[in-house]
Image 1 (spheres, one colour):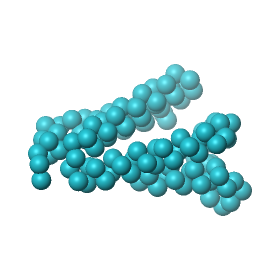
Image 2: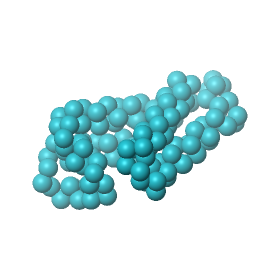
Image 3: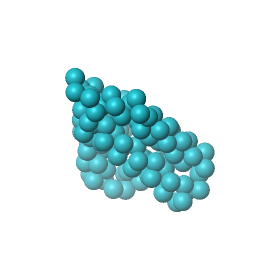
Image 4: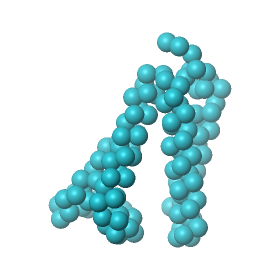
Amino acid sequence: MATLIAVFLAITLLAPGTPADKIWRLNLLAYEQFKNFGGVSVVLLLAVTVIAATAAVGLAGRKKWAWWLALGIFAVNGAGDIVSFVMTRNLVRSGWGVLVAVCFLLFLTRRSVRSFYQQPL
């Protein structure tokens, strides 16, 4: 899902003025910030796309490196939400982001999940 969202957002930044721009109503501040960074934003979103797709494929194949990558993704995501809170003081948005990241990290670090990715097929 993260892969599709990142690709979609990159496309809306590359081709503004389409009906797809309505997605940005969910977070106008993010849209303005992405627009200010110009092409760098598109490159970053495409990097997120590649990383998320790589993690998904690896997790589906029970690869240990993908488990580590998923941990990194959610740790970075949670840290980003903490930084977002410090900058915006929006506890609801940032708090939910941190909560979701923590839940995924707790799930991924459960003994049964860890062992699933450490055993060969």
